[in-house]
Image (spheres, one colour):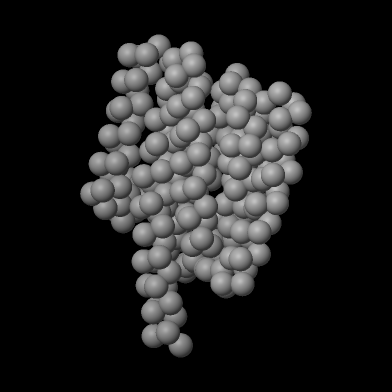
Length: 237
C-alpha cells in the first residue's frame, strides 16, 4: 500500500472499519441470496461508502456519491417513488459537484486537506427551517398524489427534507445529521413497504438501515469534531 492510500485510512477508527466491512459483506450476501439487481447492489455499496466518508468529514465523499445518486434514481423509478427520482437526478446530482467544490474550499488546513471545517445553525434559523419544511412537504405531497405516486406524502417528506439536508451538508452544518436521521426512518418505511409488496430491492432497505446507523454516528462525530475545531481556533487565536 502506498503512502497516499495509507494516509487516507490513517484516521479510521475500529468502529468505522468494521462497520463498512460488515455492511459490504451483508449487502453482497443478500444480493446473491435474494437475487437482487446488480444496479441495486452497486447503488447500495457506493451510497454507504459515501455517507461513511461524510460522517468523517472527508471531501472525497462526493466521488462515490455521484455514482450512488444516479443508480438510486433508476431503482426508485422502478418502484414509482417519483419524488426520489426527481430529487436525485435534478438536485442531488448537481449538488455533488457543488458540495465537492465548496468542501475543498473550506478544508481544515493544508495538513488536513481531506477534512472539512464544521459549522452550526442559530436557534432562530432552526425554527425557520422547520416551518419551511412543513409547508413544502404538504404542498409537494399533493403534487405527487396527483401524479399517482406511491406513498405521496411520505415520499414528499423524504424529498423535501433531503433537499434541506443536502443544503446543510454542502454548508457543513452539524444539523444535517438530525435531518438525515428523520429521512432515514421514513425512507426505511418506504422501502420496507416495497419489499413486502413484491420482495424486491432488499439492497435499498439494507442501505437505508445502514444510513440510519451512520447518521447517528455522524451526528456524534460532527458534534465532537465541531467542539475540537472550536478549541483549536481558541488556542490558536
